[in-house]
Length: 275
Ligand SMILES: *[C@@H]1O[C@H](CO)[C@@H](O)[C@H](O)[C@H]1NC(C)=O
Ligand SMILES: *[C@@H]1O[C@H](CO)[C@@H](O)[C@H](O)[C@H]1NC(C)=O
Ligand SMILES: *[C@@H]1O[C@H](CO)[C@@H](O)[C@H](O)[C@H]1NC(C)=O
Image (cartoon, rainbow, N blue to C red; front, side, top):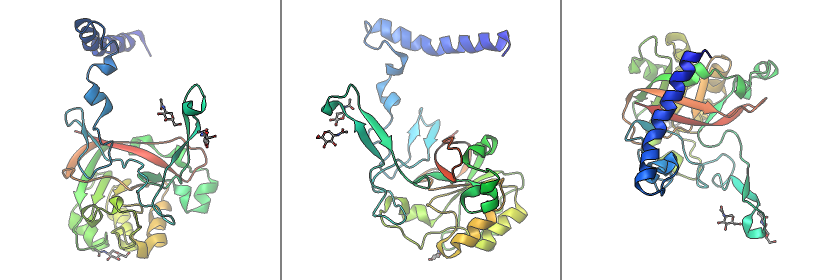
């Protein structure tokens, strides 16, 4: 980095800090750190994302579309996700701090699939979740409503009239209306892509990132074939289990960041929309 941008950056950091410093002065040091200037916005909504509602931050600038890892999240093959962290050291037991361990399937809650999830040659080629293109994961995205009486078939895809050039689409479906991510039991009647819907998308659009509102982008009856249509294409990124409750349809800046899990077939992912 050359000197000029560095200077600009330092100046803008100083500008951001200034209000906090002023507050600290005015309150006699009560809010010494800028992060404490406004405790309410620092810590977000009190309920911590465990409610079916729009989760806005920064006065509506940021919308969180990631599900909190609640024990009641639906999870295949088990009675809800259950607790995902466990204390391995605890102050109650005399340790100097509390330290938790994280343990869950990487395809839990809001998550992303890597091409190696189902395609052996991609797995062998090392197409793990760490190789996913951050440029595809971050950029303008369209949030669109799928007609509620259908899975995402070729016909449904065609009816959506998604313009060429759109690279990222979040599909909101009947799953959101039915609050399926808020229902502990897995419901196999969820809406997702059929094989011909997935193929139509590849053949007729420029979409590289597909977001859906349940744990699988492929409808249950097309679980493997529809997954394979996308995952065969190493440049397609499916994001599953998004929290799209009460978000207005339209165009946003999408930001999604997976964990850098080397060699892994998927990852929990934090996704936000910015206006
Ligand atoms: C703390 O100690 C109790 C009693 O020995 C034990 O049951 C518990 O698992 C310990 N917890 C941690 C986090 O070490
Ligand atoms: C640490 O964990 C204990 C449970 O062992 C809990 O009671 C306590 O509130 C925790 N403290 C902090 C600072 O997180
Ligand atoms: C979508 O497909 C599933 C089977 O995978 C089916 O149970 C469900 O009724 C379909 N939903 C709609 C709205 O057609």
